[in-house]
Image (cartoon, rainbow, N blue to C red):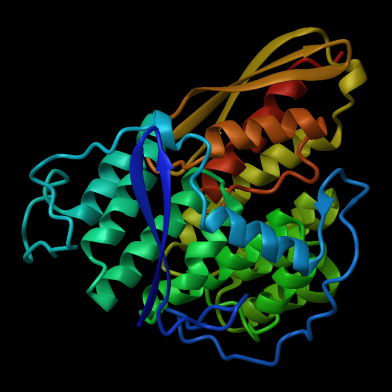
Length: 398
């Protein structure tokens, strides 16, 4: 194991970032394995030259070369976030910082067990997300001599940067440093890395990771969804979704296909796929939940199909849809034929990550649900916001 400590001073305090190389995978790669069953690897797309300039895509998304993305990741990973000085290192003194595992049958004790503290205290409180990242940097130093615990800390830090703070560069940096070998996590980490590359502006780098998956073994059809997000709906996403359905998981495959078509604004095709979910007689053990999601999406799309914002009367409209933990309600304000705001006014979600803010912001930016990507790790919450928004807007049609 080789460790490099990056030191800098903030407000007179010496801070140490552990930026290591620890039996790490090659740059831009992460180990691939799957929980249902293992994902079979296949040759990736050959990388192209990193030469070129940053350009803006027609959608407004910034496109960057591989070299530019690599430079952004390296700089972010070895320098502090701009908020660092404003956040204190705060945690319960009773908290075990060495990843002590609770004995079987032990009650949930967030004040003692680090994993439970992240899940029940950090994740559920947006005001503490930065605090969680700072804590994980501290935990890196506490466990610097334990390879396994160091890798686990890096993986946790990467997830905080990715799922909570939407800091794609720092998330990618720590994902690539964590040598994740546990099959329960490795597949998700690789997909998260591909997502970071896409968000940083490189479709090529995202596709390089995704191309290793011959099949989608994730419970949420996440490989399918990301292929659709990066614009490969017909060539990659839908064929993979059909393959998943043929394997005996029509609820997963067709639901992901429907969501992918909705992202592209192909509503009739999306409705066909959602109807196939409703007709499924076999599937994953969450087939009932997936059928509910399909029906909610059908309701949302039917509202969206006849929607003409220029015919929506000025005002604020409310509607609800089923989220992960229960009903979720939104208030949508329209004026002059434009969506001015989308606000989530009621919800029961706890692990919603950035969905409550990012999804409404994207709906306003895009003036509808076409092209709105669901938030990673909070897909159901994002879907509920989109469906409720379309139902709310339909109420205002003249």
